[in-house]
Amino acid sequence: MYSIAKALVRRAVIRQAGGLRLQHGEPQLPGRLDRAGLYLHVPFCRRPCPYCAYNRWEYDAGLYATFEEAVKQEISQTARRTAIGEITSLYVGGGTPTVNTGGLLRILDHLRASFGPANQTCIELHPDWMPPETLDRLRRWGVDMVSIGAQSFHDHHLARIGRSHSAARARQAIRDAVEAGFTTVNVDLMFVLPGQAVAEVEDDVATAIGCGATQISTNPLLRFPYARLGRQAGLTRVGRPNGRQTRRMLATIDRVARAHRLRRCAVWSWIRPQGRKFSAVARHHYLGFGPSAASMTGRDLFFNTFHVGAYAEAVRRGSAVSLSMPLSRRLEMAYWLYWRLYELTVGRAPFASMFDRDLGRYYGWLFVVPRLLRLMRRTREGYEVTDRGAYWIHRLQNAYSLDYITRIWSRCRQEPWPAEVRL
Image 1 (tube, rainbow, N blue to C red):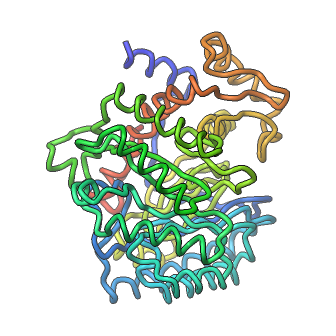
Image 2: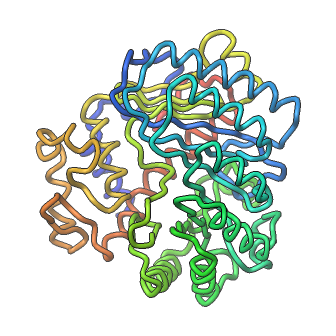
Image 3: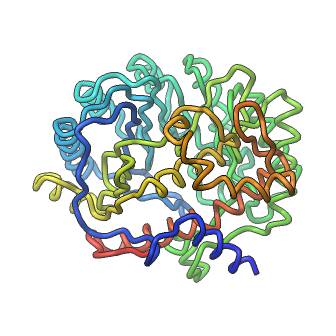
């Protein structure tokens, strides 16, 4: 029944003959984007985590130098073709972006020189690679938001999922980031870990807040078939955690966060009052740089090749794009709506005005049943996902996004230049 419902919703939303197809080919970059974000993917780690679903490579100084030269060249090529009126954000992910801090700052300097300053700069941090001197350099450069991958404050759980840092190091890393003066200090936590108790999840949330985090973001442990944990388990599709345990732990996280006066700001995130929200995924138009980086211009969605060597060679030839897909206005609107639901509000937020005339015509029907089931409510600004609905939004999004990620990532990790990936 769940599979049938999933197929019906997908068909109603997409309405595209033959489904969605990413194909090898070069998209046409627009000459100008009025407002957009920038994304930089640094794919290197000293010790890659076995559960990680993202494109990452074990750090090598020579390979990093190849990457640094290539990504600067890609930035220059793109800046010559596309101007951006307002850079809403610069987001740096990985990998471990600070595995080579000097190289990272040189790339950031090049991004700023090529496109201009961003309204905010966010960077992912690993507790083992954020000493006070690194935090000071990032803060002086202009980084104002950081996200620290603590995952847990219990050493036996950290060891079980293959993290290199200790709980004590994670706690100190958060305090160091708060002391450095970042506007937002987000802490990533994982739950539904093997053998994890509800009381341990409660303690993790309280510890992160007690160390000074301004925001917490939580994710259940997911096993992807192409990650090491997934291969060890012999998975052929995403290994999802127990639904009942997920709901129970999510309710605990919500209760503890609210008890500390944090408000829910996304399906998996809570923030302090007057805090500035950190988000890795909710941008609408953005340009990505680096191996496996995605870009979304409104006209096209496309991905760079995942392989560092193939990426560098392709940049020298003019483009590292591996897969692309043209977007109709209907699909662009679906993409925008997907992330607004993740953020729990659909209204006149940034970019909403682009779809004021068409949103009801295309997708007004999507709000009828959730309102009847009290999963959403109408507000003066638009629609709001209720606490009851947040879990089901998560289930709905995972039904599609995890499946899509698995199809794209699995294929692109095997082949630098796949001819086609069907979603």
